[in-house]
Length: 634
Image (cartoon, rainbow, N blue to C red; front, side, top):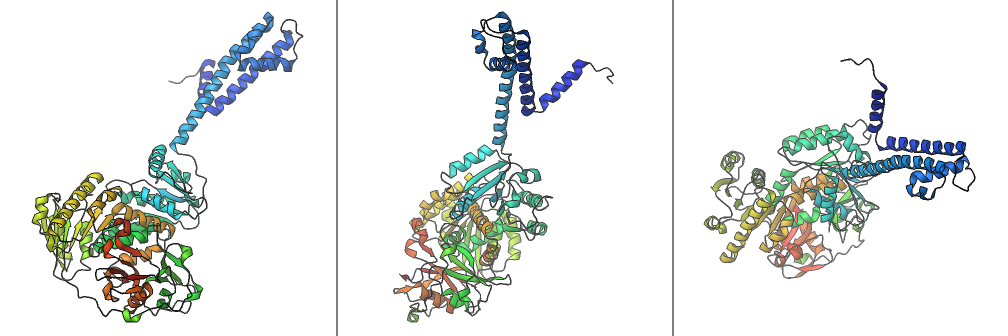
């Protein structure tokens, strides 16, 4: 129905509704104006009528206005007024002030409360630059923050900014509960969608030093990661320079899509592939997981790139022997190529950078020492053994198991066997498909509860060279999956005590907090899935060039890290410095980066006997059971 006659009352109500909808600022302005009009009107009334208190002269306009103002702010002021004309005028002023000023105070209080609620929601703009930006929220965020705090210890005013679809206060409470003293690093949280360009603008990604994208929870987390990359790179107001984005991806099928949309801006960490490769390599070499953790975290020794003019014209082998407190493992060539363990006669040219393991970037210093006190008489004539048939047992199952079996096939000799014991019903069909693809292993499946002691006793564990204990991350909650792993591990250790057989066990867990509980089992190696991925993301956020180094080390092709008997390189039982070990390894085309003392192989306080990047002049006496950690092609 069309309204032709709109009354003044309707128009006034419409105007008043619009005024109220404009928020506290407009209301404060109007109430302030009403207060001013009331004071002026009262001042004019007192001046014109000559009303004043008894025995006092008439008031000027300024004095009358001042008296009116005081009574609007404080009703008690009129208690001592005299003269009925003056009293009635001030009463009107006071009553008006009660309504107007009290309303003004209420609006102010409401406005402040609303502003606090807005701040609590975390929607205010982040005025930072050079910060590390984390997009998304998962359990991986806590190891990432830990590593970034350590990496930022020598930085000036470092900042970590987090954007996630989670309440800002909840995020801050969880972070404060995990990190009582974050050092010099400030952590700023904001709530919002990581795929919404408006929300992304809040955290100022254009001035961020690096951006880490965490996969969201759900059945298809890669879609969320790809959408976030698109929201960043296709933003109309994006910066002209490339972003430094590090993202995790689960399915290798989605890797090409993610790289296609931001080829020069995103570095991808394929989580399933990374964990599978590490487990496959570690199960055959006890202590290797400790080496990987040492290289990936910022607490201890890390991998750095450094240009050294003093090495120009020297060979790679000479570069290895030129550092006392650092271990050179490769060369980043001036043309962009990166090679780990190049031929020993490779020449270092101008613009090339050495890739070195060191405690910090400022500890990579040439020694200038030419005499390294190398004793070639201690070199061992021992050689590499021919590949032997190996028998592996996998207890448990998850979506990484197939990749682990495929990766193992690259290292095992023909005729090797692999037995899978799991309660996952779909496992036999997957093993049938895998058997068609692998060439060096014969697969066998046993269905059952891996926590069942009778089942474990029936497996005759002594016949297996390696045992891989996988968590049921696909079919169980994280806590339950880790608990099942822990119980199975306790059973295995008890069987070991009874039989006297020393099992080689690699255990996969999800939550790093469960590792401390599991250490009582004295397991050889722990693979903490979430932490491993977090460490990789943290490292790449600081230096994207490390991706090529880690790809080489984790790939079955090229050079990898091996833990080999020290007796293959030097005569045991005699003190020897690490320069001698480096020289002996170099003669085989390998790089010695550390060693493992068997005496401490079950001692977590001694890093399970693993020492990475020792001082080369320090002497060590090795036994037949001790190992040398090397980078080699096989």
